[in-house]
Image 1 (cartoon, rainbow, N blue to C red):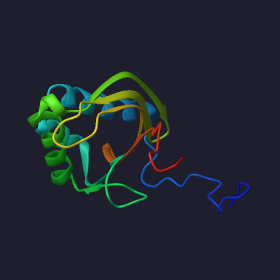
Image 2: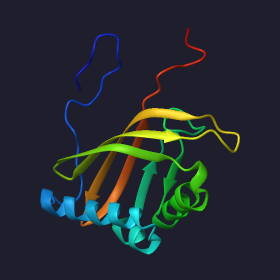
Image 3: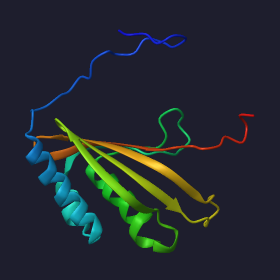
Length: 153
């Protein structure tokens, strides 16, 4: 384990599980997922997800991980509610850039969420890390950069 000054130990290597998919296969799965998302096709979105899909969202009450959505059905239900049922308050992504490394797809973007429904306005840089295993998206970890912390003065 490598250790940074003043930090707890962290793994020096990344552990990967599942098959080692070709980058072109990972790109194909992600391309289908993004096309399905763009057309709000929940059946196509679900077809891209592994049955054991895990999505760690950038917000939530269970610090430090945020809200964790487990399973294909729960993920498609969350996507439908968050992005497609209330479009006026849905997150808007722009400046999307994708990178691939082995079984990972890394997406950088700008996210804006209007204030509404008792929620604060968001304008942040975002990062999502997708892991593709056996032709399906196994996990998605989402992060939004916090540019100010009201209690951290």
